[in-house]
Image 1 (cartoon, one colour):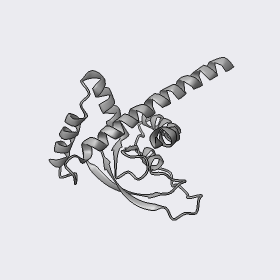
Image 2 (cartoon, rainbow, N blue to C red):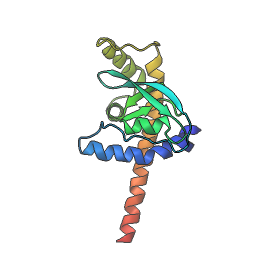
Image 3 (cartoon, rainbow, N blue to C red):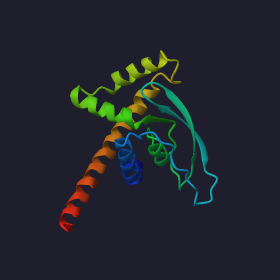
Length: 165
């Protein structure tokens, strides 16, 4: 599986950098420009970014040295698919929903329906009826895997640091 083999391991350090910035109140920063080192033309892709209160449409220049998931995490977003995502969800929203689902019965359908209605009332409408639910569930599941991998990496680094003391 591409998520497990390629994407999640590549996002560990960028997500840790995002956490560091967000702890300083700088969670949404302009990502550093990515310089293509493979001399390819890449693919221009428009991605719908879903935030708690609005949608944004961003353009990404995707190539092997600048994959979409990396660029999105640097922008505070998480992709809904591993290669050419059409939709990405804010990391803040995924963190909130993960916390919410610890205290309530997890229900991605209800959350997605409520968010779709909330955004529609503000003039932000999704093209397909079921578009957000399926993609949101995918992003949430993969995001939660990323968080577990990052937590394991932090625990490992703590053990290594303690041995060196």
